[in-house]
Length: 460
Image 1 (cartoon, one colour):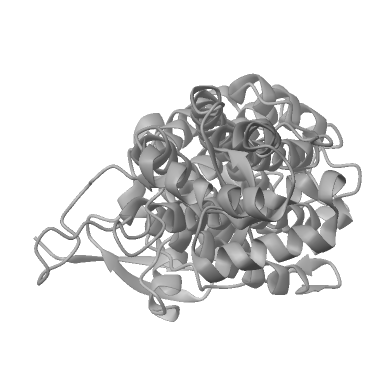
Image 2 (spheres, one colour):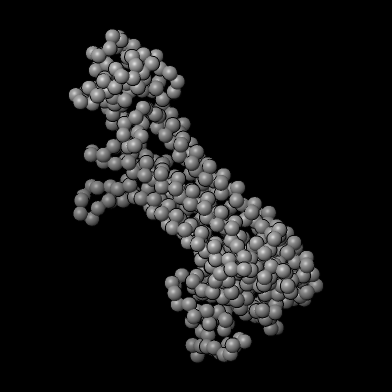
């Protein structure tokens, strides 16, 4: 059996692998863009399949396509959406900036499958791409895939992370520790208070992303080549959005201005920025965990993270904070992805943005790894760390900054002298304050009680 077959398009004939479901235009893209070896991802291919199935149904209902042709396209397109033919989508991310190669890849694969299903020739352009253009399909696929991945994967993972943090907040609400500003000893806080800041960061990140979703659910489909809707039925856009909403359960709607949808990626740039803000929160939490776990002898040693794996190929017994390190790398990747998306968003020349595949790849990767990192952070770091109570208590007892609680009683100047002497002599501040003030020890213990000081207000 021959390894290749001959296909043709408007530019002539071309050899295609014999078992390929795609045709000449896909093969030209494979030949033209041997750049990264990274194909468009599963969420994007899923969106393309959903778009083609929905478009066929709408064209059928509008009387533009016969039922048998439409039904065959729908069956084939939904198979693509379900991931049955992902290996038939080899086009590199770094392809034509409109994503035309990926659109034609989908059209050719679906046409091939639908032709088998119907027993009659179904054309990639005339039938599968009816009423569409790459220029509205690809922006729509970006919005659809990002909306689905955010709703189905990222937001639930963030809710899980937030709930995990909040459970530890309640559990650790009475555990006092030395607070730190500038990495230096400061007034005490509880571990619960410290973690509550993390929980608020995740909650606000989730809220910011959710605020973007209504704009993300607006679709450019129906704008076709330049935003005017040429070759698309006047009712196509509205019907398409309604049917896709029914199919996915998300409230998709036609974009108010398709010229915006084709020429810019402003909403996806916004989403990427919110993902970056979430990544910044991840980095802060991951680094706090690493510092708190540091040591265990020569560092802070306030907590012990779960021991997940040996930490060294040469130092026996070493265990490293690998989960926070992984999360920190995810954060760095997302920040880099956002920088590329911002540049890509500026590449809307007149009626079309021409960095669409890059936008799709980066945003979808960011959503995917942020979701996975949320679960990793929750389950492999925050849920299971233990508190080294003796270490916390010892640091608190020797913390001269506790003298701050005496400001309203002995004044700042005397308080500073007490703190400096405690530092210099390496003694508990309580002992030094007893010597340098005329307050009873019981009164000093009451005013400088670390747990009480975590409640705020004016001590004394």
